[in-house]
Length: 244
Image (cartoon, rainbow, N blue to C red; front, side, top):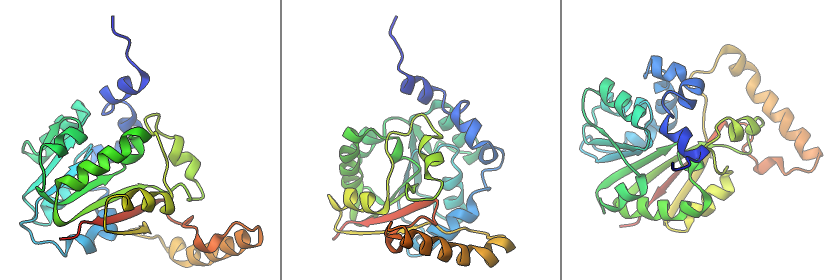
């Protein structure tokens, strides 16, 4: 009998396992995260023609692909290693858009095919030794002037410990500095910024900015270089673009 590793067991049952525990509302309504996508990806998507070819790595429930379709993009694809998520996404997308497979191999088989490759909450699951090969594969799958959009949990966030250890398949964590350094190994132009809250509550609108300012001053007094730390953003988002 072949012994199954913990990682293999978790990924094989990711849809009904961790995903159901941590992302239940997303499976109940795939539109739940659309405000986040609009707030954080909308500006980039509006620069692309509707004919753009887009691939999402690890789409899970398929919410982002559904949002892209709602914007009028039709040349959209996904590749995911979870059989349950692939089945779920294709059912509500009413098409076989998401394929089951390994992202690295999938990308290498499609050189210079995509205008945009998206990886949201994906590369933190990749073992360190496999990170650069995956970035190489993303780079190769992009057309000249194509863009990679990478969204990961922010390890400088004030509650980053929760993000790092909430999922047993998380292999690594990123800050703005480390994500920038990784992408600059291959991409000519890299920009990294913190995510924004899509629909802030009244309390967030009134108190978030002064509280952040106060905390930044406190960290400065403690000597923690607060002026350069994106502790107020739960995620960090990178756009990495190939030159022509």
